[in-house]
Length: 231
Image 1 (cartoon, one colour):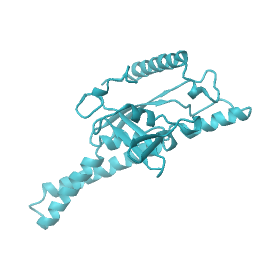
Image 2 (tube, helix red, strand yellow):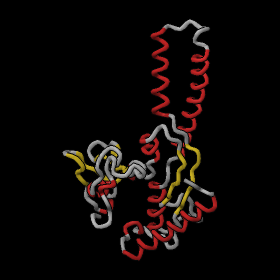
Image 3 (cartoon, helix red, strand yellow):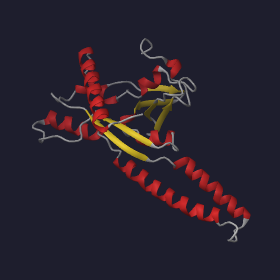
Image 4 (cartoon, helix red, strand yellow):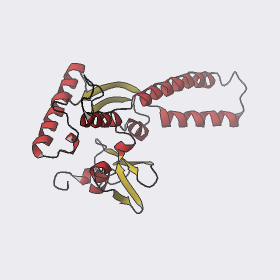
């Protein structure tokens, strides 16, 4: 990884146009761990921690003294919540890559197929609830905005205690700052499974990796073209 990754860009102030957010899980407490290049230096151990999947016998990684991490997919394989929390005042246009297909055409035919499908369901995208909650929060914030503007525009006509008014203004700015982002659009890029098998995501042969990269680029370009995605 040190050969291919420029870690100087993965630190606070390293590259203001790029931000990397990685997730893991604390082995001892089952609490989520988030590594954010805007807040800390990303190192090889952070990347290893986010891919330390125990059922493939990948060892946990000690990211800090006494903090042992496993792959974040054990809690959530789509860290949309962490991305929203990391930049809560910026509206989002999201491209979501589904490595584990949510739908199949036929039922599993044997026990390995059952295990394969079970794994796909466990690791498939589960962000729909987060999206719904984001929309609900946006609706509440818009409602608060309307009420707040009524108060501000008519402050001379109503009797409001000055201390209470300061509390209202402080709370409004706090909620707006912490939860103001809206999810504008979500584009799904789903990986095809031409020859599904149980250990496909443990296949690290160069040929397999190159094929996955090529397929991902083709699907991403197709999504960009068909949805006219622009920066």
